[in-house]
Length: 109
Image (cartoon, rainbow, N blue to C red; front, side):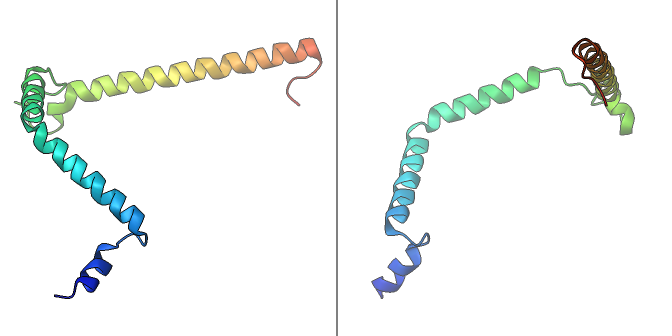
């Protein structure tokens, strides 16, 4: 076995210092995953249990687009509210620009 060829293939970043740093980092992450395996497993199982308790905005019994009626309705309400608010802000900006422009001699040209 030619160790020189193997070492050349391990030098994937072009710098031995960077390669060594990445190797140490990978070993550290794997070590932490092994060391805290039980806590990670418990956390993910608790997250899964909480997500099963959640109320999702669609009905799993319905088929097709009827299934997402609540989700679509809520999305439309948000989009309409966003358009109304942005229109209000734009109108107020235009009015104030003209008022301040009239008072200071500037404004839209």
